[in-house]
Length: 451
Image (cartoon, rainbow, N blue to C red; front, top):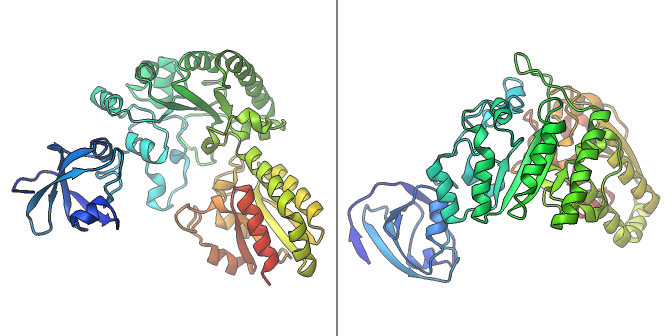
């Protein structure tokens, strides 16, 4: 070890995990990481890359002010056991685009401030799977991603037409997307894509051209999600857009399925995956489970409904007899709360449950989204006030709300209502139904078990 007295970066250590290299070295909370192998660590990308080596030198500034260099020998990819006060080590980058379809621009006023933050940070893409436009990144940063082999890279593509993408994102660098994707392809980085589709803007011939361009980037480009634009009623003074109707959704399905057939035949993968909303809007049959190819775009809604249904059916096949015996001793009447788009799906779940568990009665209650506007019809954007206003006075034993209408890290809705507050207002016991079929049936069992 060597004592030094120079310091330039302030990457403060928030936690040292037990039984790790860092804990064995005596590194403590509040110490600061200065450099690794004499290179400053400016963000998580540097940190992850530099700590992959089997031999490294790490400079730490102790809380006493002393600088210590630790010489470390470890297994390749073995974690040091450090966590920082900011998981990115420095601040997240906000979006510099002015997209004509930006959902955050369509939010009403006076929501909590975090809902208005627009992230477009490559490090969040790496850490959390967020999709980014790449417009915030300089050539040096693109080169760094390639050098460090940061992947998968999750890219919001929307169109490969340079002029059109510039108009959609309203950013001078937006048009260079295809060239950047080709650089990732040549470097053999893993890429996932996303297209927000807007009627009359980037659909039709534009969508066909985009799919053909992206098709040539397989297998580096492993999957592309195609999702319909989301529009709220809060669009005053924003770019005029329309949403897909049933006929428009059917046209998109037809076009994409033809491209899927070609890609499957020639590449071995369907590559393009439509979000469930297109099928639900079109009142069309969902693809079979095998057609989703292990659900590479489920986070964008590509197969979420099919996966949920199949999991519920499998769980019932295994547990229905046991659940039926429990319900016979304690019959229950449950209200399933859902969005307008998911009504048909929850009706199918109701039918399967009532058939397998005769003493279980279920009512499906559709909640219209008055807060954002009725065109916003997904369960993840339901608010507490709409649920309360439309369910007051219902006569059931319990209410099951969609888990995804609450924040992932805490039980609070978009309009800042907790599950406990909703219970008080509705005067009923509330259960949260996860969008995982096996866990959903476990929650049904809990409802049956509770008195």
